[in-house]
Amino acid sequence: MPPLVAKIFHVLKDAEQGGLFLSTPEVHRALLDSFDGEPAVKTVQRALEKLRNEQLVERDKRGTALVWRKRPGANGIAARSSGLMTYEQALALQTLKRFSSRQIPSLVAESLSSLFDTAEKRLDASQNDSERRYRKWVDKVEVESGGFALQHPAIDPRLFSAVTRALFYEQKLDVVYRVRSKEYQEKSKVVDPLGLVEVGGVVYLIAAMAGYPKPAMYRLDRLVNAKMLPERFTYPAAFSLAEYVKEQRQFDFMVEGAITVELRFFNGAGNHLLESPLSDDQVATMTQAGLEVTGTVLLSKRLRWWLRAFGPNVQVLGPAGLRDEMAAEAAALMALYEERPLK
Image 1 (cartoon, rainbow, N blue to C red):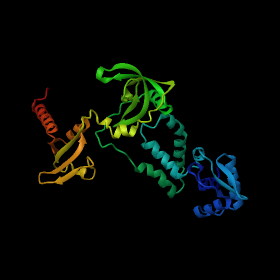
Image 2 (image 1 turned 120 degrees about the vertical axis):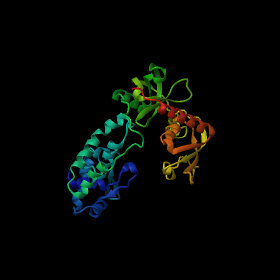
Image 3 (image 1 turned 30 degrees about the horizontal axis):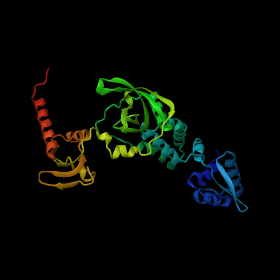
Image 4 (image 1 turned 180 degrees about the horizontal axis):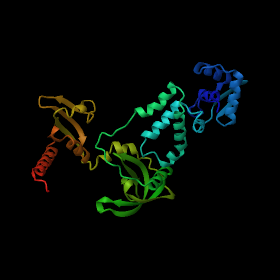
């Protein structure tokens, strides 16, 4: 598409966002303010008519003057053409493709695949230093996990597609699930998919099942089979995935309730808590013995994993039950290292 037509398209307001109509002279003035060159008003008028013929622009009248704006959905249609995609849009799409995780439903990913390809071509076609900055930006940003890197369990793409489509269309899902706690026994069940959550590279399906008051978690890599059923279900209005994850803290694993934890850190191990507190009510005091931190947290397996990661650089001062537990673990660990290794 000619560059002028693409520039005019970007000047127009978007109907989906409640954008107002612009007259032909107003579009012309916007072009003079935003771009080099001085196209004639008649040239702008012909370009607007061309966009209207391509179903990208809608036209109305303001008195005797013609006014224009983008049709609803025009950005998605136009973005398939690299000539109409801005470098900002191309960069946003490439960033989404690179840094998004598995939780984007495959249904959506399929519909975006052509846009991802167009965005890549748009950035590769950079002609000058200003445009090349967009191409180089993606290579200047990386995301790393703060934990020890494990290989993520593989998820069958076919099963993932069935799960995400059932979630998208709110239809029941027939799954066969391998239960690790029961020697990997396989169980068949029909569930109502409510959401997907990724924790440390492991993707969980949150689903409800008839006869059970609370939703359950199912690791997608343990699915043996998954089939979307034609029967629809009513998504529970009272359920909030954000609340399930953040407030109920289901992914802290075996939550035992709130406690007031008292910790003493050595060798600067806990200094990051001065900038990233462990709780809203955290109190941190630097003493001669070390950094002492107090706060309300949930007693869980995840808390214990976090404490163990500091090794000898943290001391649990309270509560007494957690202190005794960590002390017993330390004694057991010492006993292991006092044993002579088998040859």
